[in-house]
Amino acid sequence: MKQQLYLLPGLKTARHLSEQLEGAGLHHKQLHIAHMDHTRTIQYHLNDLNFLEESDVIHSGERGFLVGMMLSLITGMIAWKLLADHPAGLLITGFACVIVLGFSTWLGGLIGVSSDNYRLQPFHDHISEGGAVLMVDLRTKNDREILDSITSHFEPVKPAGFVSSIDNPFLGDLIPRKHYS
Image (cartoon, rainbow, N blue to C red; front, side):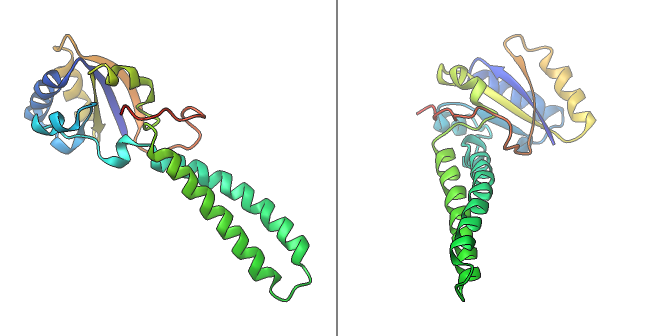
């Protein structure tokens, strides 16, 4: 599924635009707001980002998994070379590979916990200055038409592009950017 992103000056504009979009037929769950103040976002009855949408846990965990695959392959080859004649060599080698893979995936996710989602990293400065980012899930062509017709009448709304809702471990910066705090 694709998501259309819009830069908004603040939560008042986000609330007004969300009301217009919901009145035109988009569902509340299709609209996600990225803003620094989560309490105000909820007070404005906006759909705030959840933990997985805001942080980079999944994306960094996937990267950790890929690194872990390579490291566990190397670990497996070394362990098998050292333990080839041992009766439990295969078991120990497999266990070592699983441990390395699990640790790498866990470490990647741990790094992602303290980092912005890679889709939101380009808008980090805008959000930290008090702005908001509206993420709209486009499920049908009709959703796109509704979105275009309503957002064309809002002056402060700036289109910021499209992103895929499917995580791609090969996209984003190599070094993740820290949360807004």
